[in-house]
Length: 152
Image 1 (tube, rainbow, N blue to C red):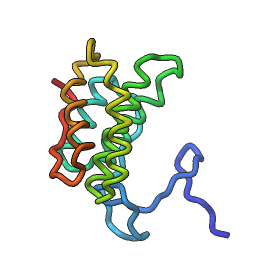
Image 2 (spheres, rainbow, N blue to C red; image 1 turned 90 degrees about the vertical axis):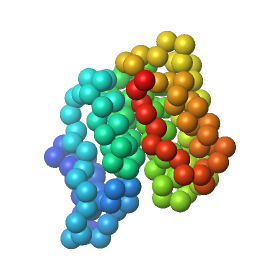
Image 3 (tube, one colour; image 1 turned 90 degrees about the horizontal axis):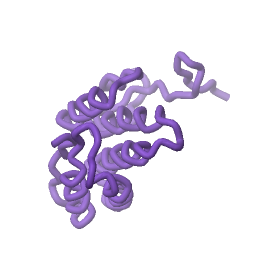
Image 4 (cartoon, rainbow, N blue to C red; image 1 turned 45 degrees about the vertical axis):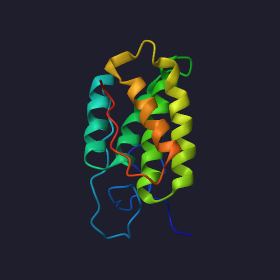
């Protein structure tokens, strides 16, 4: 039985290279750089995720946003916001990969998760704009969805 790839912390992690949409490539292929792990302020995470979105790399944006979500304590109210933002990036990843059903499902879930933050959006996040973007993608996942803008 082959051994599993492990990261520096010893956790199982696929070491295969990936394309810009996060799909695994054959071993030995040239892929895009992986997201560097590390602590980021919310503003740094948003800027890095937006940079990935602007480069049409929503899977990588998801990884940055997911890291923010998972570093927050379970009881932190903002945790749902970061999870929702990560889901929006996953929804865009599915849409770009041609999985329209997955795009619709995950994007709807992400939009619902962030909507409660629209009245008082933290960190300059354009919650209302993102909810509108998510609604448009859910309504027509086959349309040429623009890259969302995380901050107002």
